[in-house]
Image (cartoon, rainbow, N blue to C red; front, top):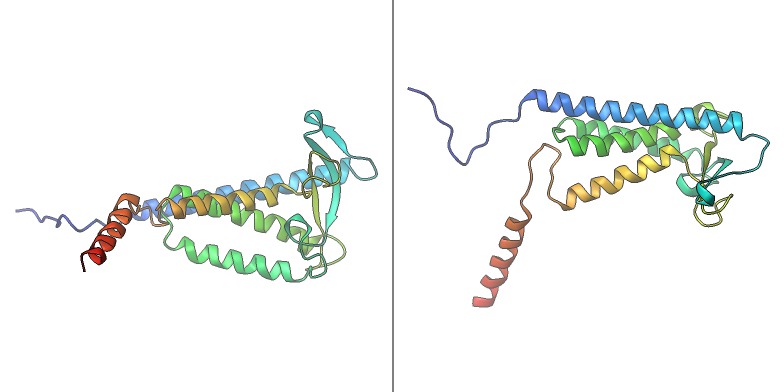
Length: 200
């Protein structure tokens, strides 16, 4: 005689899925940090003391900018605040990882973590001093010094892409534990509620 599982009950997700998702998060974050720091090293070594480098027919310019603000030069006068924000974001991601079993969510959170840590490293180790370091930016679109769009770096890009991906996953019903809320079920419940009110 074998035990059966009721149809309305789902087996608990295996620990392997959680472990794999966390490793994906860590790998994505590590890759972003490495790529971000390598491109910043290249920028400081090759672009210091020279004008913007025009590539892709002027669609992209490489221009060395040291940014005391947040992404896109926001909050330049409050540099010390951004390491605290980065620490809070990383603490939130760590808390989220306890229920993480979704690969898409692992990628999204890895991008956010990598972006936050990439600029956090600059805040700690670059001039003018700890927690006041200026972030190295070097990518300018359609104009050499951010006239069309703010100058940014790989960390900024990863952070923005991670946030956008997380929003898409949230609105598509994908949960961090690997389950998915069918959008049709949501719509059906909303329609049932509306029809019930109409019958009164």
